Each structure stands twice: as C-alpha cells, then as structure tokens.
Image (cartoon, rainbow over all chains, first blue to last red; front, side, top):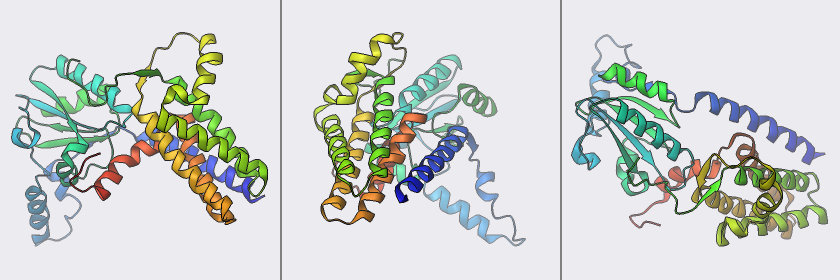
Length: 162
Length: 154
C-alpha cells in the first residue's frame, strides 16, 4: 500500500515538475544593473542600493571582458554559453547560438567549459548548463537564460542590445 | 558550427534509445516499489543495478535495454533524426547505479525506509528522463562540482 501511494505521488509530482520545467526552461531574463538594484527601491535614503550594486560589480557580475572569457568579444554583442560534458541540451543550444551569431553581424558566440572555469561559474552563480548570457558591446550582461533558449528569444534579446 | 564543442561526442546515439531504456527502467522500478520487502523487489533491483552498472561502466552498447531497443524496436522505427552524445546517458546510468546500490543496501540491512527513499529517487529521475527527456543527474552535475570540487579535475 505504501508502495502504491509513493508510486502515484512520485509520478504526479515529477509530471508537475517536468511540465513546469518545460514551460520555464530557457527563458531570457533581464540582468541589467537596473534589474539588480530593482529589488531594493524601498529605502528613500538608499545606501543599500549602492552597497548591493558595488558588491555585484566587485564580483564581476555585471561586466565581462575578453580577459575573463579568454576570447575576444563581438563588436556589437556576445553570446556566452556555459556547457559541461554531461549536458544534453548544450549541443542544441550551441547550434541555435551559432546560427544566430552567423546571422546577426557583429555577434560572437563563446562557449565556456563550466568545469574548467569554476571560479567564473561561482562568481556568476551558474547552477546548471546550458546557461546563456547575452552581453552588449561593452561586455555588460543584459540577459540570462538558464536552459536551452528559443531562437526567437535569443534574437529578441540581441535586438534590445544592438 | 566549426567550434570544437564541449558536448561533442566521438560517438552518438539515437536519442530514442536512452528514452526507451528510461521507460523500461520506470516500469522495473515501479514494480519493485510496489513489492518492496519481497523477493520480487530484490530480484528486480538486482537486475536494474546490473543494467545501470553495464551502462555506466561498460558503455551504452552493453546496456541490455539499449540492446533491446537496437535489435527489436529501432528496425521498426523511421531512421533516427536526432542524435545525442553518449556522456550524458552514461552519467545518468552512474547516478541510477548509485541509487539502486543504496536501495540494495536497504534490502540487505532490512531497513525498508532506505530502499523506499532510494527507489523513489531513482524512479523520479527515470520518469523525468522517459517522459520529458530531462536528465536529473546531468543537471545536478555542475552544482555537485561547484560544491565538492577541489583544484583537481576529473
């Protein structure tokens, strides 16, 4: 009896999780400095906002450079993809980003082996692969997608940057 | 497309193979969950442990459910259109192996709670893989790496 209850519970919960994940996976979320400061607009004499953004900048969370990434940035935008060897959707993600980078002039697609860059992974709080960052011409992170992004969303994110 | 890819495999498999294997795994684990405490569950768990072990340590070619897929199912399907790297399903098999070994430890020590928890965990992972093509072990990989890694690389 316990086995049956557990079986039903597992299948139902896993189904909800799977559907939720399918729906939310790969959505492009804004990561502008405004978005970082946004959660704490409460205080009028807001010194906290400064502290918060400062600490993010200190960790390199806002701007990525060619030195950090080990490769030149695109003149207009850069698509940074974190991958691992044990990552199913990384290949398809690479295909999408390569296509977009070829299609949109001045855009470069960089793939980073998360395992070999754990410091960067920790700094940027990358939790799973693929994680895709959209950088503007200066290397500032503007969008972030966890999971495989849709091609149209990538193009839309670039459209806001260019 | 010329960038040397990190996920690029030397060998690729039809994506439907690991999904099919995961579906059989779901059935086997569900049956063992329903019969925990009996010889049936123990037998099923031993079989599943061997299957996971073969997939993880020998390779997908040796994985019995994969062999069933290639000999009986694949010839009846349309040619494969999607391929995937071998590393993720092998890693998933390793994670599954660990779960079923823990389940068997529960059987040996007669602590049913351990067996229930381990089988439920493995079942959830196999179901997500079969139904959604979602690899739970792979998703946990980077987090695990972040938490446990010392400078040494695997």
